[in-house]
Length: 258
Image 1 (cartoon, rainbow, N blue to C red):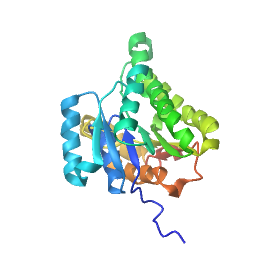
Image 2: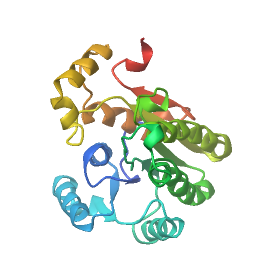
Image 3: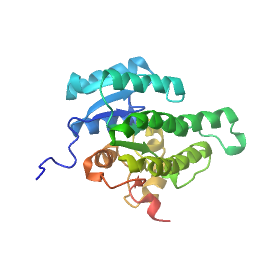
């Protein structure tokens, strides 16, 4: 009988895009806590190196690497994934986390800003996911986890491009499943609710908005990055071997109620 814990990620290699800070960095740390070796990703080389050193000090320098490439550029993605596979090892886990926000009413939203959000939040997951899948498919195994949002299923004023991108990401997860699950891959998504991070601190500090979040969420609080790491560990592990094409909402019940 196999005695290996089903959540154990020892010996697995994971890439987390947009992981030099924030939620991505927390997810990379969570995967490392479960035993995985992690590759951090970002565009700001200095911040990326600081993040790598911080995680390496915590988990060991042999288990933490970093790579910088442009997730919206097909050639840059191909070179970045090739570098990882040729120099660091075969990727077992991909977390498509990188994304941006742009708050402007649709009537005032410039096409360039619409395209920038769609490219960063949706097209990048296709580009990176496809490049990683090219290598996972011959190996007949691999985990791809797309980071969505409650806006995968809901909408709010002024974030139309983000809402469209995250809704598209939910169906991209299904499309990847339709084409790749038969070859041994599991592709799923997590959809965070409102998570308290450095980037959302201004919203937390906004008394009216903070009150609305706490009243709108059945759990009556903001989420934390620790609330996300467990579900991502599960989806990255053998414990979720028959879970495919799903979007798991980590939102304190927000999308379950009206």
